[in-house]
Length: 285
Image (cartoon, rainbow, N blue to C red):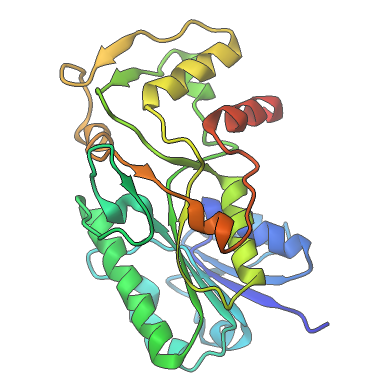
């Protein structure tokens, strides 16, 4: 069988989980990072790494038949579209995946959104993601390449869970009435994306989240219960002292529907709610 090659623009947390799963299946994986030390570490686990900005990716773009875009856009747009737009137009990818965010939907006051909902991002980061989605969509349509856009909910997994804060006593249960967030375990992200790789003819938007949007204070309380530690006291959002960044985290409330990953890609989530996910994380830790 011909070796399949995945090129990853931005080998971040979620992209690495996807890359490692495909590498275990015999794929060649090339990825980028800004950090030379991270590049050396990932080379040790049989990933071919490039330091970018810096290394020329033109040959890698030509060699790859699958492309995963995970790098965050900024005020200047998507960095890879800007740097390699022409090379990408001449690529022969069988599949392009773009990791976006449910932040493109903005705040819905706790109401539900699906893939057909209008985009109304309420943060700069959400606006940049919307623009990057549009840029990759335009490229894919112009050259007839299959594109899947994955709008990820709040990501957690190994090294990204609430246990450390609960153990240290720094976890806070900030309560804002009606506030709910959707989440997704990183392993389930990898499952969804790999299911899309296997069915490249199914294109478009996919919301990637679990089945239970929940208030953040419930997640902290459950983590404390699993650890057998006291549940942190509740603090009212209005009077809680927080940084501007932390407060902005509570600026959006919505329930994200995930029907399409199940119906179109036949995905069964391993962690359908944060409860199963946190139980698994605790066992692993």
